[in-house]
Amino acid sequence: MKTLIKKLCVILATLLWIQTAQAANKLTQLSENAYVFLGTEDYSANNSYGANAGIIIGDKSVLVIDTQISSLRAQEFIQAIREITDKPIRYVLNTHFHSDHTFGNADFSALGATIISHHMADVYMKKWSQKILDNGWSGLTSDQAQGTRITYPDMTFQDKLVIDLGGIKPEIIFHTHSHTQGSVFVHLPKQQIVFAGDVLFNDYHPNMSASDVAGWVKTLDLISALNAKTIVPGHGELSVNKDLTELRSYLLFFDEKAKQFAEMSDDRKEVQLKLLKVLPHRAHGESAINSSLKWKYMRKPASASKTQK
Image (tube, rainbow, N blue to C red):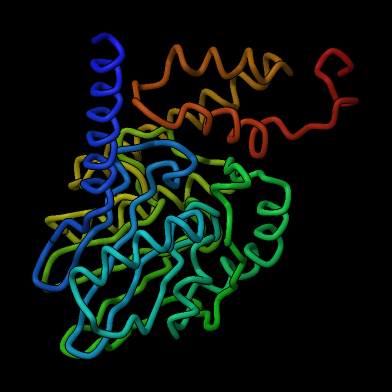
């Protein structure tokens, strides 16, 4: 009897997991033309660290916004898209170069899509993406990364790009160096929707390792001035202008305190613990604090310790 009950519990748990995974992989409709592939059900590496992606559907074709962290995730995304529309996926936008937003590119390229990014995102992808995949730095296991191939953008731009999908023309905008040197966002003026990419993190500690804080603040202010009704963050739940304001304050405070604590100690773990005590609470992405310190605030060589000053 106990064995039977145990088997039934395993079956029920498996069914629940499948239902949860299926629910997480569905597209959520934002308007007549726009949908979001929300990553908020699972914050693991295998689920692109909770990264959101999106689609915009025109009369003639589809624009995909970011491609997830692996071939497996990209295929799940493609399946979700095909449940909504059979129109050709003609364009893919990488909002920036990070692996959780770009490693699914090859699967969309195989469908004939043109991969687009800011020219600096292309530069950084060509510098880092293959190394990240080859060395497992994305956090994926070999099984999770199975079939993933690096595919770079086919087309780049500098400041602004408008794409005609037929009946709708999304505006892709680069303002200045923010989250990364090539971070862009997508604006649908009539629908009052913004796909912010990682310019916005909602309830996540943002990854600041490749950032320019002053430029990031300016970009948040620009998005805020658009008065969008719906903002899709790179990570986290659907957002509004209040979330832009909260991230703006967080970035300035983090920058101030990280510099202050890094002057007091060369121990990155110690600095991270100090920051966690003073930073506003955010539920996810604590590892981003360490990455930000490592690559932006504490890059001094070991020989330059403060005790030798």
